Image (cartoon, rainbow, N blue to C red):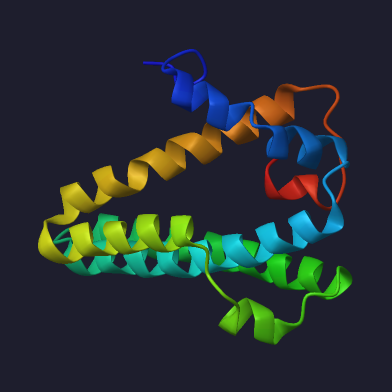
Length: 156
């Protein structure tokens, strides 16, 4: 199933107005700053879930792959911190800012699945996000109207 042409909800996530504005550089600054903080929260919890997957694995190659993913996430977190500094978001807001309900609901559900179930179930719980971000990145990368530069590096 291709997430770009399948269920309406998948298409609406990939073609959301927020992403259109972000890719064209027209997203209002408060919305961009809010996104950075929420994505930082998400990355924190996604890192924890990735580490939990490493813990649950019995395969050294899988554990090593999780360690590599964690290093990639750390690179993205460093980019977030740099962008936040440039756009006036203090480090305290990243570490202690309010987390939106949608972020809490999804990340805690993933953690709960990972805690209660096996490695495979955790991977399945994490998959919608991975597929969604992948589809968004592909669409924005392929779109000639996407503004290229420091912010777009997060997706493209």
